[in-house]
Length: 243
Image (cartoon, rainbow, N blue to C red; front, side):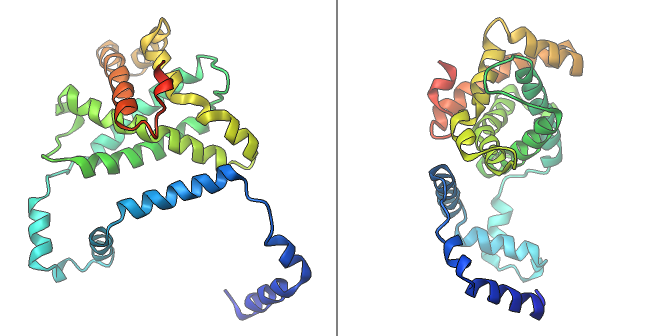
């Protein structure tokens, strides 16, 4: 910031309307969201993790201590992140494309919405999936269905949070609209797509994209992932989503 900008900012802060701005109303939903983010960050970012990330950022790998090198050597391999990112992005796009065609109240997804939700959800899921790995993770093509289901469970887990953030930050959406959407219940709509007569819609979308074989696997793994997410992360995915 230039000295001119700093003086202008200081001047504005001393004007009477500045005091009025500091009393602006903050919607309770926004306060709860920020508190949840702060709590999540504090619970996940340990001092060791911050130190490791900083070391990688500045490229000081040669300055690693013997203890940190031992931790790295013991960590399971996860060289296939790009493959899992591509797999997750494809599945999320299929999920959301199927959901968008169901006509469920409160669900309004455009092409840009689907891309944004898919990218951010997969990024978060990839991080949590990697952190939970206890053994080397192969490419998705070589992974057993149980491993794929575990990754898709993380995708379901993060989808409501990403959608909530999208509603909260969208200029076109009000706080009241955000609070009333209940994350547009994307998980509930996804459950319906994979478990009711509308499962054919999910199968059709997947078949058009990938062929019959992958469609069968997607229809099989999706309800498993949703159910597992509800059981493992009830604070993120409400049990009522699959009622």
